[in-house]
Image 1 (cartoon, rainbow, N blue to C red):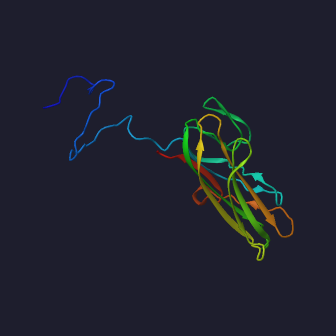
Image 2: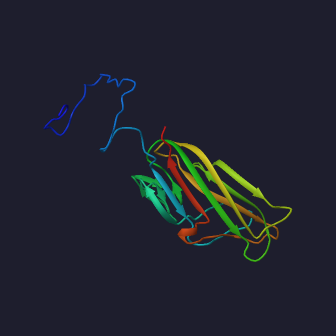
Image 3: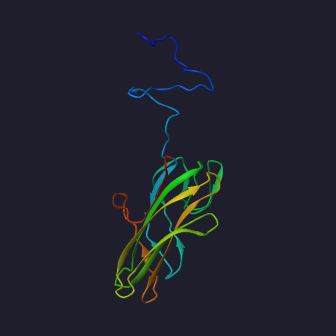
Length: 200
């Protein structure tokens, strides 16, 4: 058979060569490929598995505590600093070890518990310098609600060594009492945080 060989590796060309595939030629790949395209990793998704009480109208980090997956091991779901991939990563923080653009997404569901009292919910992405990268607010000041849900998405450039993202929120109530962030079982996640690397 043309192209058959008894060796395990076939090398085409040498460094500096260009291999041209003419128009109209079809390349069929039924094997394993390496070195082509890219991957959407590091990637993670995690959610809040335990309800979190908030101080009214105060920006607070969301205590995301349960990972669905963490491809690359770059999200710290614990409540203290941890070393991941040789990098010190603060609590509840995503710090990827591969540079690139990342699609980052999150949602926060807040509940006053007993009455229509929530005036607004803010959701933020913060960086390693504790500066806001992106934010979203939904306001119900003229008609407070008992339960509200706000999502946020952003494409963020991260350098793969020190740039990080964490999720924060602020919920304001009409009577000044502290609301809570809701937590549900994994099959109906209400408050969650995730990211994946874009192939560019």
